[in-house]
Image 1: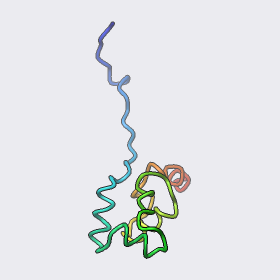
Image 2: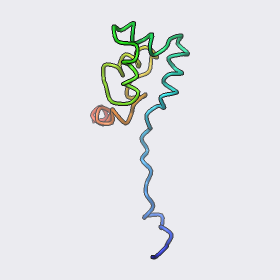
Image 3: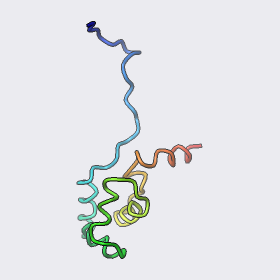
Image 4: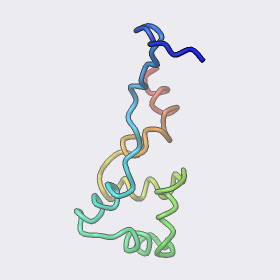
Length: 91
């Protein structure tokens, strides 16, 4: 087995795009606005646990509800989920 250092041109270039917000940061932002995710779910006619789905998987309706409540664009909270949208906006 050969062990060698990678030269500058061989090093993996880190992706410059941002990562999704951590779920704790999203929940904290909601709490800072005076609410809870369960409360936000109920206010939007959903079961109190339903919006938790948006923290784990792509669900545009839930993501939008959360984003509007904390006044942050969905592509800022979940950039990995909205990469294609951001690329299209750059064109």
